[in-house]
Length: 241
Image 1 (cartoon, rainbow, N blue to C red):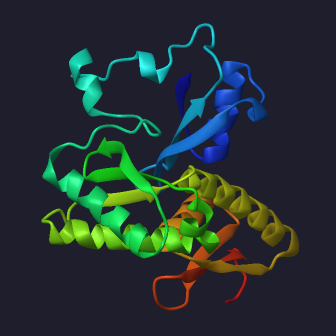
Image 2 (tube, rainbow, N blue to C red):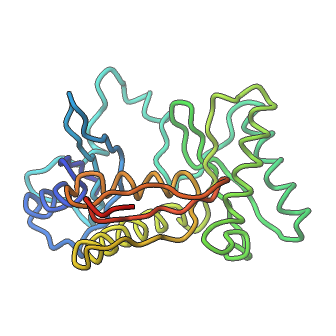
């Protein structure tokens, strides 16, 4: 079952979910849906989805609640992750063939399917016996394939659409790993009143680290370096840089 919760920070949202559902944090999976940084005229917040093995008495799961303005017939147009669907239209067929062709020219076998459709976003699922190789170290091979897919989409007249390529749920696992890393590093920085430079990351991963630590008052982050893969420095507020 899937439930949604909000909080000013990810930790607050998770704590609220655990308390209200009456579950230990290890007994459910968390997916970050939306984050908003705090500013002069707005408060920061994080929206999460909580995935449980079964229904929770007194709570209606998201999957059972129709969205405002949507009819049951509309639900088929929004496919949840990990549910491949039939390609719709020439563009989706072309981009699937494009990614499969690149993989084949790399010397591997794999199939690509539509994972989900959202506003200006298309998720593709890659299935292959060589998934670990296609992911590469820290996801760099997968990022490269995704970049090529986005370039192809632009040349097809869809430069306003973002293509997300995933395999073996790598994107979600990577996100959860980075959030844990960010909190661990923040604790070390606060304890030692020092700074720590993280490994080079792509823009999405860097943004996730910045957002995760945005509401920790005595810790700041900044990106350093040149090019696509920059590093995030986490440092104690007030420490001279």
